[in-house]
Structures are given as C-alpha cells and as structure tokens.
View 1 (tube, helix red, strand yellow):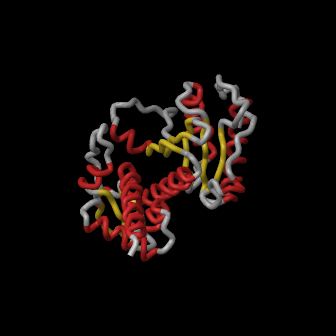
View 2 (cartoon, rainbow, N blue to C red):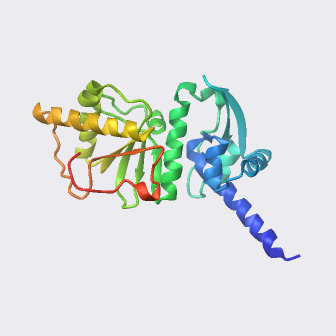
View 3 (cartoon, rainbow, N blue to C red):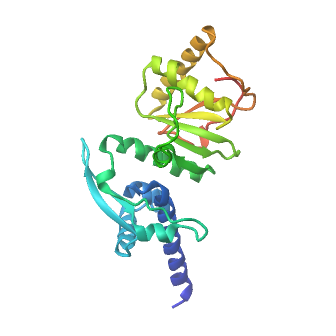
Length: 260
C-alpha cells in the first residue's frame, strides 16, 4: 500500500487540529456546526469524531448548556490546548473553557459573532478581536456614554480596520441617535477604525436598520450635533450586511462613496 494516502491523512488531521485550536485560542468555545466550518468538513459524523479525538488528547473538552429552546453542547479549549495553540514567541493565555462562565442570555449573540468571523476569514478578513473580552482584560479604561464598544474589530481585505456591530435585536432610535452614532463618530474621528459594519439577522432587518440610522444621522445634522471631522470618499463610514447573506460572493458589501 502506498504511504501517500496515510501521509495525506496525517497532514489533514494536523491541519484540522491547528485550525480548531487556533480558533478556540481566542473564541474559547464553540459548537460542532461552527467548528465543522473551521475544519471545512461537511459531514456531522466526521466533525464529531474529529472533536472526540481532540477531546481524548486533552486539547478540548465539552459541556452542555440549557437555553430557553434546547440543550446545546459546547466544545472549548483546555490549558493543554492553549499551550499547543500558542506560537512559541507568544505568552500562553490562561483563558480556557469553563461552562459556568458562559452566559446563556448572550450565547446566541456570541455564536453569531463567531459565524461572522469564520465567514469573514474565508473571504480574506483578518485579525478579529472580541471587544468585550478585551475590555474585561483591561478594566481600567474609562467609560462614558459616548465610549461605545463594538462587538468585533477586524481588518477587511483592503487592510481597513472595521468596527463590527452584530444587531440581533434593533435598539431604540433614541439610543442610536444620542449614544451609539455619536460614540462611533468619536472613534472614527480619532481614526481608531475606518468604518462601522452593522450586521443584522435578516435582510429586512438590515433594511430597517439602514433606514433608521440614516434618519438619525439626518436628525443630528439638522440639530448641528453631527461632529464629523473625517471625510469618506472611497467607502461609506457605515455599511450594512446580514447573517443570511454575509459575504456570499454575489452579495459582498462593496465599498462606495458617501457619508452614511
């Protein structure tokens, strides 16, 4: 028997291990469905067997959590997994999967952020950062009503830094007008990122949010409260997408001119 198939199988196994641990190094935990996308495996049984192998090696562990609708099994990284996932020049993170620290109320939102990251990386987006976790790691940073914190930051394929807001439920128009839009404009003026990408659950919600933010921006302009010092000629400062069509080839968010 040729050694090539065995060699290829070993290389694929190593790649799957690297891909899963690299993702969980910062995400900490995820689901079989999402980790299957990470490994580029379509068959559920193959995904499950691969995760069991990593579990048996002590690199990940699983635990179930009860939500309002169902029980969900999460797979997360262990200290041994963090050790293996960390490049030699970097410090090993002490963060590992602990089911008692998983927020049931925030779980759907967090898994949606992971879906945005997974799909984005397949289309050339890089350097995703979970901003809430960064904030918890740096608690001394001053807070104010204008110091809005996006859900994610990342670099798009053009190298622009993007603040990503995952809006599974739309907020009140007053909150967008008085806090969220001015807060993002403050960060845009400071060049902390180049634009904001708002990701909703569905295309109709995307349209509703786009119309709402456009109206709120117009209100701020009329009240002379839109203190924008940057210009946006090559792309829009606010862009929109939804989880159903996020970065599908025919529906990629295209850069274009304009102020909103």
